[in-house]
Structure formats: structure tokens, C-alpha cells
Length: 337
Image (cartoon, rainbow, N blue to C red; front, side, top):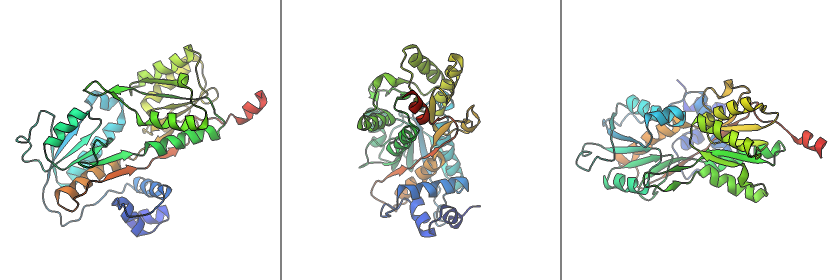
């Protein structure tokens, strides 16, 4: 079983630094690149966060997911997070209690704390807050003054993708993403879209005609790439909001006779296990979903056991895995210039 010492050796940092990063010590002044190396090393070594053995209380943890089993299968991102949560609870001997928004203070009297995974509307958050339980949100940050939260650093992830495209000579950069609404009927803003628009606008490269949105399913990746083609707005580089959608884009490109990466470069998001087996292997962003699920349990323990009063937000870094779906077009541009 891997230890903190093993992670330190692999990441090239001190044991103390590894311990403080894994324990989300906000007083630690360390570069994001160092954090990424530590998370990556821990992931590769299959390190599991351990809870101090003095913690004997068998907690009852309520779990609330905003997505359906069908949506979970369409987007393995949430599946990985759920499994990480449930495996960690089982490992610690804690009881998992499935809950819903129909629960009340009375029905949740025996529950010690709540983990919420997914996207929640303002109305839903108010219901959750009314329960008066220590609560941690994964993938959203509804109110840092009241709840703990674990989020992906979308800004850092998007910048790494855009930098990769630009370094390979691309200026016609598009995005196939998702436009969802919450149960209150309000549109949910995709943080990737916000970061893309900001970044490309700064570079003078933002073109709304290269942007398409649907849902996080393969069929929408398929449909939206075909729309870009039919409308004659096909960019030379396309960021796809998740790898499942990228699979759909690959199929559409094949049917249209568009070669990847010769005609269009594609970068996905999530790094699902099959990404490296796609043809060509998909360049994509790795998310540390297992750590997000485990950290949720860890944060909740701290609040329940009285070790911390203030709420915290943990921002999890990402890593771009470059494979074969991005082409350097700088030489081609020179020849056509």
C-alpha cells in the first residue's frame, strides 16, 4: 500500500509538503504545478486518504445526487465521484443513507452530515440548508459561508487547453459544450464556457459561430459537430466538454470524411478509461474524481467531529494528457500564407 513517503519521492517534494497538500492546508504557499504533481503521483500509486485511528464514531452520512442513473451512465464523471464517495464511506465503516429533497429535519434526525454531488438550484440549496447538517458540495459552490465545497479548477483547465491549441498554431478554436437548466428553470452557466470566452476574447480569437451547446451525451457531440460542418463553421481546433461527447464528435467526423487530427484537432475533458484507445488516442484533461469523492468524506468528518468551524473550498487541479488528436498546423499555415 502506497504511503505519503512514496508520493513525496515520486513527486520530488518533501513528505511535509505532501501531507499538507493532501490535508488541504490553506496556509501552505505552494505552486499549482507542485499540487498537480502530488495529486498525479497519489493517483498513480493508488493512495487512499486515511483517517486518524482515534476516530471511532460510526457516522451516518446522507448522500444526495442531482443526477439520475441514466445521466450517470452517459457521463462517467459523476459515476466515478459516486463510487469514490461510497467506497470511502464503506472503508471507514460509515453508514450511507440515501436522502432526497423530500426529507425533513425530522426524517434526517439520525444523519450526522450530508454530501451533495452535482448541480443544485437555489431552491434546492435552501432546502438542504434548512436541514441544519454539516454539508459538503461536490462540483458546485452555492454558499461558501454555509457549506464546504470541492470544485475543479476550470479556469486552469481551460487555459491549458487553449494554450495547447495556440501553441500548435490554431486560431480557429471552437467549443462543443452543454447548456442546462436547473429545476427552477434557470440556465446554468458552464464555467468552461465562461473561461473560454474570457481567454479567447483576451487573445482576439473569440468567434461565437464556432460555439455549440447541447447536453453531456455522445449523441450531442455527434449532432453538434455535424451542425458546425453544415453551417460551414468548422474550426481547426475543437474543445469538447466531456469525453463522451468527444466520442460522438469522432463518429460524426468519420461519417463526414473529416480526419482527426489532420482536418480538425480535438481535446476532450475527463480522461475516461477508453480515451487512450480511441483512434486517434484522445488528448484530454484528467480530473481527479476519486480524490474529490474521498475529500468530501474527509471534509465532512472534520465538521462533524468538531475539528473545524470555518467552511472551506477545495479547488482541485487538473492535468492535460497530450495524445494524438491535436496537430501542429504552423508549417501548414506558412505554406498557405
